[in-house]
Image (tube, rainbow, N blue to C red; front, side):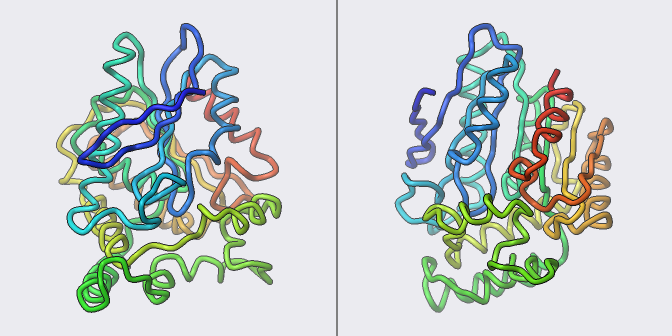
Amino acid sequence: MKNITIESNGYELEVHYFAVESPKAIVQIMHGMEEHQERYEPFCQFLNANGFSVYTSNMRGHGSNAPVLGYFGKKNGYKLLVQDQIKIATYIKENNPDKKIYLFAHSMGTIVARNVLMTSSHFYNKICLSGFPNPNFGAYIGLPVANTVSLFKGPEHYSQMLEDLAVGQFNKAVSNPKTGVDWVCKNESTVNDYVNDPYCGHGFKAKAFSDLFHLVIKMRHSSNYNDVNDVPVLMLRGAEDPCTGYSKGAKHSIHILRKAGFTNIKEIVYPGMRHEILNEVEHEQVYNDILNFYN
């Protein structure tokens, strides 16, 4: 694995490059909310073993290199998150001009990814979205609340109310939870690792929630997709993942993408799995489904 630093709008993005000789294609990974790229190393190693080179990155406000965890900036953080990933895609294409680029995004990563696709889907030849949040009306409530908290308490203020508004309801879907994040994964080992990781579940600042809600509202409207490269799209979710909105929410997410112009969409639902399907006990099934799609 090689460490790369890519500058984007004054921020140093920490990128990990897992390379193989003569790769079939290049995979760009976008991680989820309140986590980091190191959690994807087993998946990267699997992709390497099957002939794919991989680039991962810590989104701004995430990981050990973040100046402030859960904070993207005082102004236009939602735009910066998207521009960061476009900058990485540009770097990948410039350094691998003869290779196809496949996208893998998880959770909040799919929110950023769907905003990237609005202007830059031409970078990608295949798209895989995992644990994709449903763009429901909650963001319309959350945005003015987050803006108000940011205005009166400061952009870097942490608000439990905002955290509860964004993700606080998810754990109610789990019977007799042992932790506050059991909804993340049914695999207890994964949940324990998440709870004990200082770079997971660290919370978002008020301004970051404003940025997140901005992105969710944008991806709700198919008319925002101005550069649609109609490539194959694979949508993956656990049947017990509340973040996707279950069948109704997933259907809505898929409908928006189809209306935008992505016509070749396949969905796979995994019974008994929750949000982080890559980290469930039965993750090999998920790995192989992604591999079959990329192959």
